[in-house]
Image (cartoon, rainbow, N blue to C red; front, top):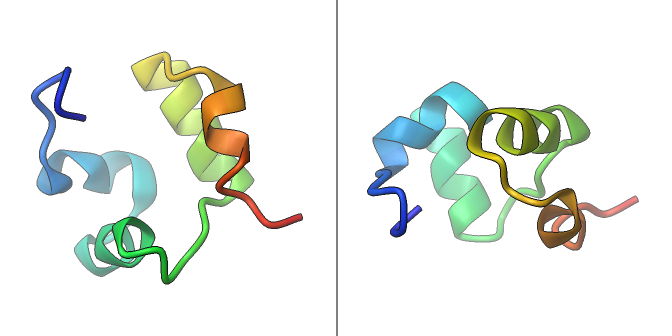
Length: 56
């Protein structure tokens, strides 16, 4: 986020509501596969970097 100059507000379009973004960054909620797909496709974040955040 820092490298791209993104804020928590910017992440709403990828992760959902403001409260959901907050829950994810405070590690109260895991990323869903849908969220990971959006981050990979639109922000070009390697899936491998995000898959550790998913509980299968």
